[in-house]
Each structure stands twice: as structure tokens, then as C-alpha cells.
Amino acid sequence: MGQRKDIDGSTGVPTFYGSELRWKREEAGLTLQQLVEGSFYGPSHLSEIERGTRRMPAELAAHVDKMLGTDGFFKRRCEDVRRAKRRGCASYFERVLEAEKHAETIEEWCPTLIPGLLQTNAYARAVVRAAHPLAPDDEVEEKVTARLARARLFEDDHKTPEYWAILPESLLRQPVLPPGQMADQLEHIAALAHRRRIVPQILPWNCGPHP
Image (cartoon, rainbow, N blue to C red; front, side, top):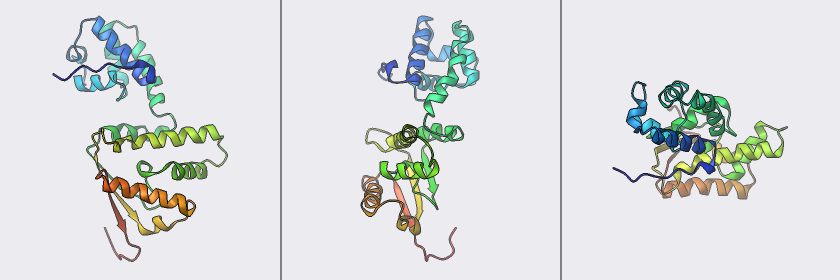
């Protein structure tokens, strides 16, 4: 059995929610398996919710409330957790955020922009500002921070999915940033490749027909 990890509920809404869930479960004397009994979810799914790394589905929250006698608390608050986890990202992107954290492989074809997972701070800020030219600075900063946070997938202590990105040559030549900042962006991609965190592939402009 792996060592039980403490949950720091002060780090954000998802971990606070998860720590409360674990506290109520243990107060009731239930294991993860016992709490999910009768639902369509497994104990590993519930464990990830307790650690703040996976969102709580409404139907599971209702089941938990019934099992723990918590008067609908976890169902009422699960939407707060969902909003907190996608802060800085569009609501339609929620499924992608969830999938990235648990994916074994990610494959991207990116004909117009360097994908978000590979963007530097400067590139992300330029793209966000172009998409939201009238947004206040703090809103832009929130979106940039959320985008850069996704790249934690490539940190050395993280189990990295097999990530493959195909980029057209024209994308590397577009003057999205000043030369120095664009060089930093390309060096960032190269560094991830050298560390064997990603597999980038460049599609030459004159390659002819391709799949």
C-alpha cells in the first residue's frame, strides 16, 4: 500500500473541497471503496477528487452526500470546484483540461498557432491579447497564468504523457513576437525535445500532398 499523502486544503478550492471530503469520509469510518459502493465510480477516481486533481461529477457528489449524510453539501459545492479548476480558461475547454492531466498520449496538429502546452509567457500573452484586445490587464494575466500552468505536465517529477505536435514550417516563420522573444519560444520547444518530454515534427512548406 502506498504512503498516505496529506492534503493541503489551503492551496485552492479543489484541494479544500477534497480535504473536507476525506475528513468526512474518515469521520464516518469508510474506506474509498466503501464510499463509492453503489455508484458508477471507482475508489481511484474518488482518491483523485480528495487530492484535488479531478473534478467531482454531480451524480457522484449526490451519492457521497447520501452516504455521508452531508445534506447536499458536496453536490452544492462541486460546481464551485469546476469553476475554480477552469479559471482563466473557456468553459468549453474544461474537458480538455481534465483529459490532459490523465492522458497517456496527446497528439496535436497546429496549423495556426504554437499549441498552448508549448507556449512561453511572451507568446501566450501575445495570443491572449490578440484574442481579447479590450480585456483588462488582470483578466489577460489570469488567462496567461492558466495557460502556462498546463505545461506542468512536462516537469521532471510529473508522469509525462507521450506528446506529439506537428507544426507547419510557416508557423515558425510568422512574426508573432519580436525576434528575440520568438527565438526564446523556439528554444523552449527544442529544450523540451532534448529532455525527451515532447516529440515535435516540422512539416516543410514544400512537402507536397500529406495526410
